[in-house]
Image (cartoon, rainbow, N blue to C red; front, top):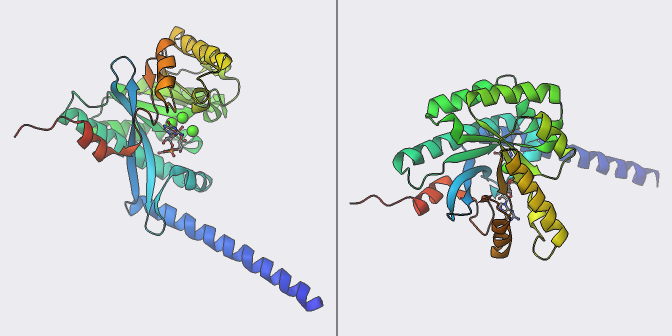
Length: 281
Ligand code: C2E
Ligand code: CA
Ligand code: CA
Ligand code: CA
């Protein structure tokens, strides 16, 4: 019986050891993914409701993992955030997104998105040379600053106002726009609408889900849209999956919508090929 206990302990220790090795291996592979060119840029259209056409696009990252295939951000962003690799990933996405959209604008201005939005993690907002990174992405690609939107969640924005506010002011002085992502899911939303300079408000998908047939929720979403417009913000409804949701949002005066009903995220090159006007022979 004594031996058994000891074995059990060893097994536990071996398991812990394996988990640790596995984690270290994942971390190393993720760190290398950026340099090995395994990241992929996907774009999802943000549609202008009135014209029914793409107005802007959101950059969403994927990892073409040689071991596991194409991976969604949910499966590697948390580890990337814990280890700081997220800063490299976000820098890559920023540059690629600016490049892709600038090229599109040059090739075919009629169908190109007028803006591209890029997600920034909490860690990235605290990197001292963030403003330089953004300035570099703009100058090296030639994308006009007002065509770039940086998306930050409420949680990120609220972490430390003393740090975030001057940082956001710096970024806005470059001419780029700031969006509040997943609006309505964090705390004290109204407080920072007063305190933080933002340009775009993205209503979280959870408010669009179940919108049809829920009068209270409709009143709420309608109020948020009006509030955003009163403050001079561009309001985008996220996660629009059905025509009925889009119809309601249109009636409420929402001008921009994003979601599977309007277009899924896809490789930037595929979206370009699909939407751009074919060159005449
Ligand atoms: P997010 O910024 O809120 O991005 C929107 C997510 O909703 C995307 O998931 C998109 O594919 C998904 N989505 C779009 N329309 C619909 C819809 O109609 N229905 C449903 N159910 N989902 C929809 P994705 O690409 O898996 O990204 C998940 C999250 O990962 C993003 O949420 C963002 O927080 C993070 N993320 C993605 N790319 C980056 C990046 O380059 N950097 C950083 N820091 N985070 C990123
Ligand atoms: Ca986003
Ligand atoms: Ca969002
Ligand atoms: Ca999110």
